[in-house]
Amino acid sequence: MAKYSYVTAYIFGKTEAQQMEKIVERIKQNVHQPLKWENYNNTIVRNNTNCFSHAIGSTDSSDRSFYRLGVISGKKDIEQEYFSAKEVKELFLSDLRVLELDAEEILLRDKDEILEHISNMNLQDNQYIVALFVKTYREWGKMRIRDFHFLRYDEEKGWSEKRFTQNVIFLNNIKFQWPSSWDDESVGVFVITR
Image 1 (cartoon, rainbow, N blue to C red):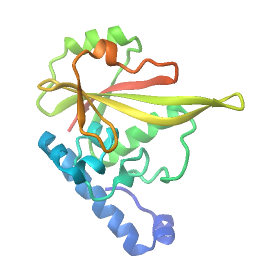
Image 2 (image 1 turned 135 degrees about the vertical axis):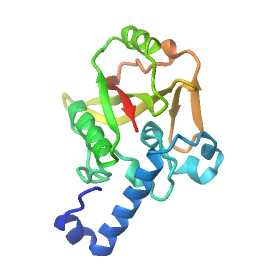
Image 3 (image 1 turned 30 degrees about the vertical axis):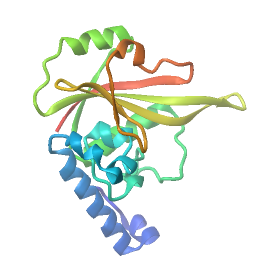
Image 4 (image 1 turned 180 degrees about the horizontal axis):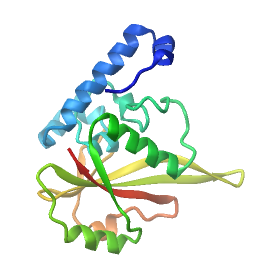
């Protein structure tokens, strides 16, 4: 269970902290089931989920603010900027720990090596792969994080992504659809076990 401390209770009030815990518990229950792909056909689900919810396997649409990295673990406020790719990765892993999802990083950086490695893997029924990226920009000579994005790989469906308010997009040619523009930075690729 997420640790919503005395600080959280003080800031949000006891009932708000309890409500936050209930939402995290609903998301946790959701991610420990096989992904219900058909739920994306529901407009409410489609409009209240994003690439992070898709990456963790949640179609819970009760509060979309929880699908910002660090919110589930209580380590990042919805309004705070991300300051590094390392921080984004740590927040992602913290959220996974709260949700009791295991993550094993694939320690390769080259896109072709990653895709070759994944094509030779045999995933269990309770496993899938996510790739995490950040979009960056330069401001006053300093690199800043604009946003994060996930791709998801399931053996039975292949590669997919979810963009906010859009349905899931299946990536039929991942070698060409892998994010590679000048402002995309790979943060890591992970085997997720629920």
